[in-house]
Length: 279
Image 1 (cartoon, rainbow, N blue to C red):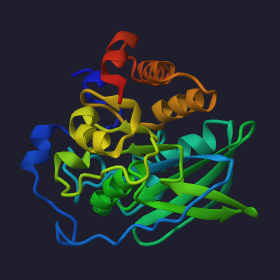
Image 2 (image 1 turned 90 degrees about the horizontal axis):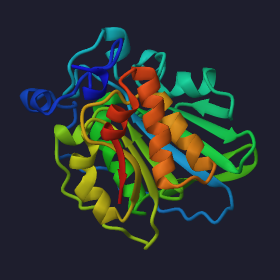
Image 3 (image 1 turned 45 degrees about the horizontal axis):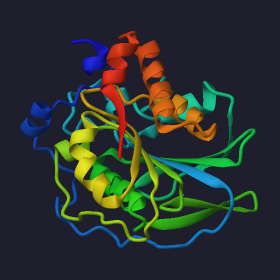
């Protein structure tokens, strides 16, 4: 199986639909336990925000093919495959790119184990990245979809400025295992405010699994996948770079595909087939 078919070079967990259905491990809380009601704090500032929600890879609580314990512990963001490891979101944006300046980092609560707040060095954009405990992937997906639908809005304060997050962001991204392979959600996430937000969904077969919810939320998808993939940060970074330049959805999708092909060495044609855009 090639990388663009889903088996990443190195250590990517390949979460296939068959694997997801075979595994029945669930988080400690009850599967249908009620989630806390979303906050709805308005934001009228001029700066735009990109909010990235990362479900930490978790061998015990997600339907993934197990990876080494060091990178598959969903309660340790510092070494996690999708956060602190080589091509994780934190490591990549902090150490491997120079267009974002880190302003603040820290734990939010027992669900969001670390939050990073960046500001673009030349454009009026903030980037907020949240590392969700892997056992709470259901909450991660729910927060993401509520944000796209405008049902969850909030703000944070950094260096004397107010930054809009969740549904106050112009672009909301999800990175990690496709949790919708393992569970379904009762909420349809119908758009609550008539505003269309942009979305990036880097997870296996995300177009099929997230499609109905995204359509209900009224979001515009810039990048999502048609098959198994390695949801690593270089793809996210290059898509965001094109977004902050004001490029078209097709240009953003192409930037993501080029990054994926370059790092996975799978060829641009295959990467373009894997990573597509759509509303």
